[in-house]
Image (tube, rainbow, N blue to C red; front, side):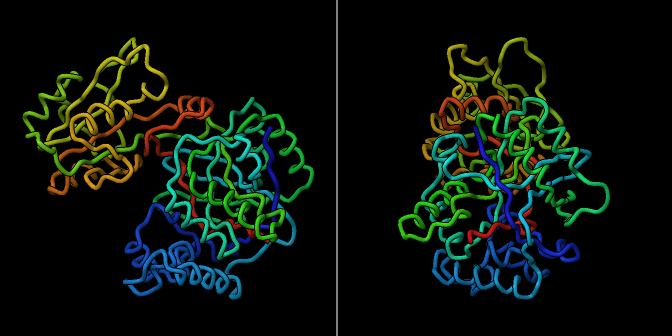
Length: 419
């Protein structure tokens, strides 16, 4: 059974929330952060992308980067732009986006639940990214980013959480990329106790986003335990928690720079050995994914490729003997096309392969291929959330960049101190 904990968050005053809030560190480059900070110097990017406040030739892994993050964070605190709540709370987080409303809550969870696999993973972490976030958390003494967790709702938890959203203005609100992010502080001990009792009946949490932030938090607990400076707060980390049926999943697109030894003609012929390849015709390029040309009564792999100014549908039956991971479209694409045909054996590090998040319009794929930067793009169908949770339950690992979850949360609206 999983645990949740209230905590004394650092948060911007309501009047400053818009200026402080920023996109997460891992969806923006240093150059993009530098440009954003030039327009808004108060942005929380000064903490989570502190290298953007330093000279352009600064090594992003240099100690000064983490020291600057801590200095910038404490400057925000000293100037009253981040204030710590006097009493512990749990923080409802609501996102209004594109006609949808997503309601979850921010609480602390236990590193022991992670160690005991009650907080389940479906992706491998990379050491370099783990090391970066571990150093960032340790130096700033703060969890500055949110891990996104899902849970299977037995039926009564989400309605209760939704009932806690008070009428009136939120404690903090920020708009970003067409979405409205709202934070409501819940300090009533009875409400918090009720939530904790409800989650005592939940078997597991599942990481939807933030595998590196979660693992780095466990690293911090291990490190501080060895150094004799473990605190109760450093044995926990901050997460935003949603019911599994209250989020959306988009596909994660792939772009390839070249076709290796293939020409476009021989590449199409090679694809036809595995897939039924059909010209798709015109698409709506402002949406995020392409619907299949036809429905199927049996499971079918479906993906869409853009090359030479045209879209094609690639489809083939799912092997009935395949397990959950092998049955994913991204697994077939990686094994048969990217690795089998193009020799891209390292989907995490090969420079010939790039990913584009699912909540990006299809025209972005077309533009990058039409510009000549890439030779082809693959638009993937969304993975079903039941498959994500089932793979995690089985201890499996999905191919990298298999899922793009919505909502995407902002940084800087809720922070957790390790002290």
